[in-house]
Image (cartoon, rainbow, N blue to C red; front, side, top):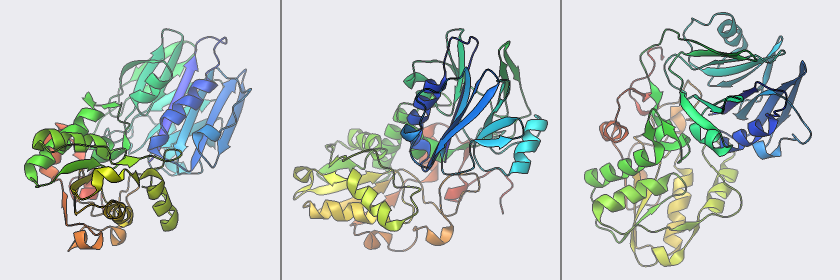
Length: 393
């Protein structure tokens, strides 16, 4: 999981470094662990990086009229390849990156933005539409590209459009040129809708918030439960819980108070730190749970450790019953395309899982209901036991 951004100004009066910096902060939901940016100013190419959050990048005093940035877990980005620096959403070897830069016609399973020493941006979305990529601008002065439209809006830019699968853009001081490329059968990552994208984003003309509310509505239709309250696990479970409440008539309430900075537990390797992160973002409002039958809705379950901790928190807050519903189908195998889904040996999806996490019941949304909620079947569902890009082993 990662987020990428690129900007180019047609005038030296603009300093786009801070726009890149804040764009990366807006994309922090897409990955944690490493952040970095590269800039060009008067043929000077500079890379600034950190092993922490995007907000920790030291950009004070940095100036550039062209810049690219990365947030995620891969420590090699931004990567210097000869006279270019490149950032990637997905998994790619150095050889694959070199071939992608040399041959714009070959199919790609990753998206990238590169920046040359003279300030030319090359942007290409993967051939399957697996990874989102959007084009924006600041009037006629600055062009911006980002993994999500919310990053463009967050820095005051105007969204122009979504890049087509396989599309190539070349942006320099003379303007922008578009080169359509051969596209494969579209397979947008289903977890973009369910988990990864920001709540205020749009993907393929589908508002993420509305998609998650619809997931909740279909969960209510598929799994009617006699309960007193519906609670969503922050942040992504909340709109799903709102949808369940609307469709079922059961009251929705906020059940947790977020403590400290924003914490995402998916993708944190250390089990103890994952549980600490879960506790930090899940301090319960006890009056919501005390002596009540609770429907607890989360976006997905990977190993079950975090969800088990959440159920324990709800139990300690006084819940009589805890029924868990998940807005993702069962995750049954790892992702070869860069999403943090671990090896199938560590995934929990069989047997009496509800007992292992301490719940009274546990249900996943079906793949068919997910298709209906998202309004498309052109999705990669490989990690859910469904269709991938056709090259899986």
